[in-house]
Image (cartoon, rainbow, N blue to C red; front, side, top):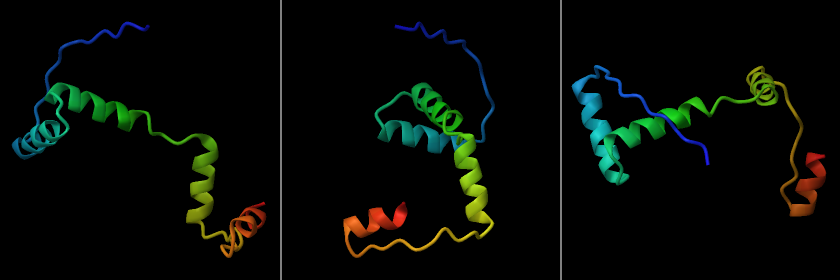
Length: 81
């Protein structure tokens, strides 16, 4: 198992943001530190890969990929091929 080294640091945050973080941490039954660390890790690891970025650009450009037939599961699978 990988050993995780944590280093103490400090940040200045807006009071209203800190209050919301405390509330969300409490609802999640986590310490403030753990909640903030987990939230930051989620954000940092959610970057899309190159294929997904290309698909997003294509969709935003308005390119039409075709029609999906939802009349049955078999028809849907066939229309996606």
